[in-house]
Image (cartoon, rainbow, N blue to C red; front, side, top):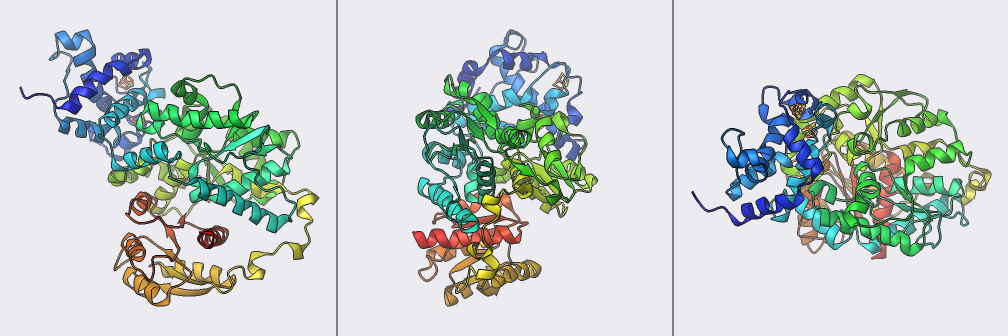
Length: 579
Ligand code: SF4
Ligand code: SF4
């Protein structure tokens, strides 16, 4: 028999150290009744393919456990189908199962009469593979960013702080110079607010919406200048060391600021990691309370600290339960209670709550582009669920789900918008006079003032309707717009015209947006032009950021609205000007 590979040997040795009572209970309890089979979205999308069944996937792990850590497999391996790991290819095959065929959503868990929790030992195996360097490329990149830069999207401290300051300026330009904005590193605050880096990078409106709500409630709050990321890729990669280091950074910062409570913005895995798993990974006694912003916003309404006008949200909405938030943390009724307070037409989707199907982007799947086709195929059940509601907007309390849902909505052409509770609450806010009665002349309305006057912007996108929409928004705000509908034309025009900003689609004929972007960065005439990627393919995001060139200054997922375009274009121009 050939010698076992070094990596396989390490995985087998380390497995013994990772096993705990909960995992062993799940590894030995399965009676192969098949009850869990149809609970998995991968199974529903691949009828007749047994390799997607939860029990089949679990058996691939269970057989290794039995061979090395269970007496039955050591004595009668042939009887209990025990097997070992021998080659690096065995590890690669296992990787494609634990990362590519399971989002750790735990829907099979709640449908198992024996209480088998596949997601728990699936995560354990992910961690073992990561420990020997076997993982999808995206997992390696994101983990590295979280280890080295302190957040999983590689947002630099100066960019983060600059974004918060810029949002404060935006709020003050709208509501007057005395508007409180976003306090940074304020000591002894009653609330320290932590966010997902996606909010800084792709969705700053969620931060300013939260700021509006805190300020309107008269909260004594702050945001930390570092250690601010409440997400934790350790949950997805199975790396408990990363989980602990990430959680500790945030806890330490709250302690340093003498904050009284940590409020966690809407993110399923961020909430689970920070509030539930983090203290164990970090081996810390956390001596301040932690709560979801959903709870905070609901309390403000109930206590009369903010006033809400439901009729500002009349478009039909449905709600998608994040697996981590709902199934794993039991937050099922809380978001619904808030949703009913701030909108008039809430339509439940079925099944929902703890029985809800995964958005299919969970478990870090959005970072694993090699599995995108099977992910989108498995999203069919979620697409059917969404469509059946007749809603125009799907609300979710998770940034990961926002990406997963946006991707599947585009793939299945559902024409729905994805948003979060913070956006709906902010929209429904009834502003008190201190904010609402700012004289019109003191609030420079973006459109009237021509905020982009003098800017020349190249819009590169192969969808004529989209080019028309973006151009109209930009021209209405004073910009001069250049248009290109394929990659070659976009690059040539950029080189010739040297615009102040380029908005760039990724899927275009001629050269793709990824190629154009890299070429722009490597060409002297265009290397300094800021680029805002606007794409309907969120799975391509990592590809752009993995280029060996400086990253784009802006990024937006389609569908986009007027406000989103303007905010990101202005932010991109401003950040570049400040460099
Ligand atoms: S429902 Fe539970 S016991 Fe039955 S096959 Fe699935 S994991 Fe095994
Ligand atoms: S955890 Fe979710 S994705 Fe994984 S096997 Fe179970 S139902 Fe399927």
